[in-house]
Structure formats: structure tokens, C-alpha cells
Length: 145
Image (cartoon, rainbow, N blue to C red):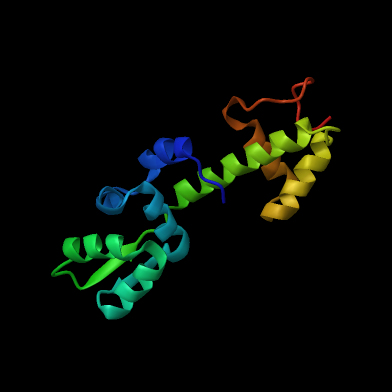
């Protein structure tokens, strides 16, 4: 999934409050990597956790987490469903826009069907995602003609 700096900044507010400390320690970008790889998991604190985190985040982040979690028995990485769903939706909108504006442009219906298959959603759900938040529509203003 492509995440740009604007996404990172705008989506900070959707993160669970319990994860804010982790974000402050290791940064938003590394926190998203952690959520993507380990979201929804509770880890017992120990050498296995630090080894796994080291491979995912790097030793510098692990050292910061070790210090912050000293004295704790476990570490929970939230799933951050709202953030991941919004990231997916933004990616769908970007891809949709590329498909309908490429040369030659793809029809809106075909673009929606292709994205539906790729993201394992219905074409109606793709239409809902594309139509939300005033997203730019084709000249006739309707996803399905």
C-alpha cells in the first residue's frame, strides 16, 4: 500500500490513543509498518519480541521500545482498522483516477470492476468509496452511466 507524507499526517488522528506513545517513540512511518505487520497481536515482552521487532523496525526503534516498555509484561499492537481502511480507500481513489484519466481513458464501469476484483470488494462498494468526500467524478458526475 502506498503511503505518502500527507496521508501520514492526516491519518494521525484516526490512530487509537493507546498507540500514540508508540508513534511518539518510533515515528508515524515505522508505527504504520508495525501495524501492517503485527496489528491485532499481543506479544509477551522478551527476547523473541525484540528479535522480531528488530527485523521489522530496526535496532534503534527496538531500543526505544525496550526503554518505554521496561517493567511491562506484554505489548499490544492495535489493528488500527479505521486508519487501514482509510489508507485503502485513498489508494482506491488514486488508482480509479489514474484509470479514468489515462490515455486512452478506461470507462468508469470497467475501472470500478477492475478495482473491485483487485481489492476483493463489490463494484458498488468501489462506487461508494469513489463517491465519498467529493471525489472528482467524470464529466457527467456519475460513476455508473
